[in-house]
Image 1: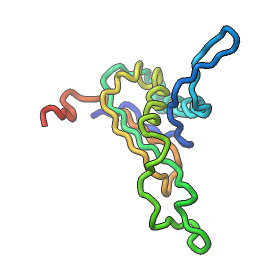
Image 2: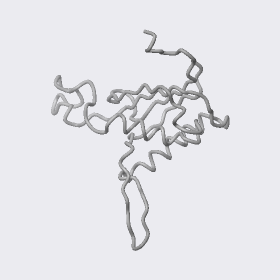
Image 3: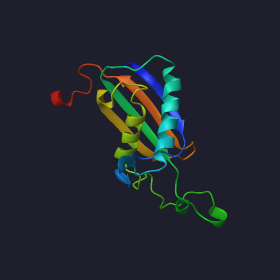
Length: 156
């Protein structure tokens, strides 16, 4: 596969929340339930735009590969002389909020008009969330062109 773009966005990944209808008098509009989402999307757009380096959006089938790195809760670490050391009971994977699918949706929306014309062009998604042990929190993004016959599970 040919890499279209690859970049990292630093900061706490935010999930695409639900839409909320707001009212003020006769006016009605829809906003995101997560107030932190717009800033996260701006950061992803900026990093994606810089990585695209003015090449313009692509309009071909794409593979989206995402690795989200989240901070560990303080409760995963020991105290006293064991401060800074992971407890043996600390889980390897972050099985808590935010949901992986909502993190992916936020990236898909953020990169529309930056990397692709429409996120409908994404035909394969590989995504994972991990703890940011030894690295900064954020997301690694890799977008590749999908090739005919790639990962054709129907023929397996």
